[in-house]
Length: 267
Image (cartoon, rainbow, N blue to C red):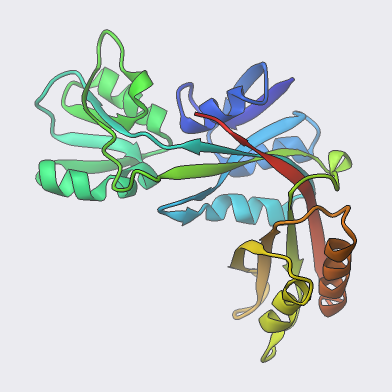
C-alpha cells in the first residue's frame, strides 16, 4: 500500500502515514493530497484534521468538502515538540505555524528575542536548521542527528497535545462499519434554528457528536456548511435515521457521507 501525506520525511504526518502504508510519498499541501486520492492516483492519503490545542485544520476541511473521497481510518498521534539546533546560539526558530503556536509559552519565556519563521512543515524547519546555523527548528526529537542536537524536549504548552489524522481513500472504498462517522452538510439555507435542527437529529437518538465545525460555502456571504463527526457507525439503525433526517433538512443542498471508521493510536 502506498500513501501520500505532507512532506518532507520526518513530519508528524509522515509518522502517521507510516502506520497505514508500507510506502509513503510526499506533497506540499493537503489540497493536493485529497485531489490525488480523488483522482485515483493514490489509494490512501493521510491529512491532519484537528489538533487538541490549535483546533481544526481548515485546509483539510475545505478539501474534503470540495472532492468526493472517503475516510477509512483515524490516526491519533501525540505531539512531542523539541527545540533542535546546531548550537546554543541562533536568531530564528523555524517550524510549521501550528508548531510555533503550540510552543508559544516556551518560546516567549526562554527565547523572547528570536524571530519566528513559519514554514510548510516541521521537517522543513529541520532542513532550514541543517542549512543555516543561525536557525533552530521545532520538531519531533527523533529529527536530531549528528548535525543537529536537542536543546529542549517536550516544549509544547500542553502535555496532552495530540493531532488527529484522517486516512483518506477513493469514494468507492467508503464503508459503514466503525465506531465513528463523518458527514459534511451543505443545507443551502440560512434561517433561525437551522443548526439546532441538524443537531437535534443526533441528540434525539442519543448519538454523541465529537466535533461540529462550520465553514463558509464560498457561494454567498453568511452561507455555511457543517462538518459533523459522531460516535456511531453508519451501519447502525439510529445513525442511519439521524443522517436521513439531516439529509431531509438539507434537501435544497447536499450531504456527503465520508464514511465510518475506527481509531488507531500511534506513539
